[in-house]
Image: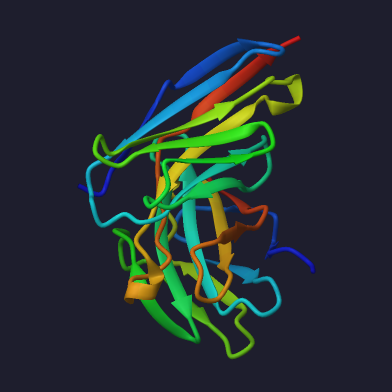
Length: 112
Length: 116
């Protein structure tokens, strides 16, 4: 089985712009979670989607949003980018009815 | 209550030695405790995981020890190799069967260097 794929792998944006990141989970996995990884804050949970519904949301401002499509692919969007949004954004898909999460390689976002 | 505290921040071990990384938690609702390994430029990879109903789980050279009463768990890497040099994260979450979600709370990470 192919693993979790994330596109693009690298992204450079300027302050004030918006960005959309994409995640394709492992085939058959219906749950997709997003995490932000920074040197200062570590790995922090952003949100989780299951069958196109947001099940949980982390403590991030409303500029961070996401959605999931019927094929389980997910996107996250960050509007009005700030310098502090520079991070590695990780997507994880979960085996149904288990806790087992598999992470993708991440999208490295740099905000200038 | 939602935090997972991890120590040490960094660790240097000689090849063939035992690497030990510790984590502690407060939230007794946590029901699943995985360890992830992350190499530079890669996403975290699931190494091994445990539930509170067992005190120890072993997979190859990796062992999780779990102390429910102390709310602590640790990762032991036996016969550490230079290829084990990476950042290790402990994490915790609640049981999705109970209707909770797959939200992982991560420790701050331990940078392990295994010297040849």
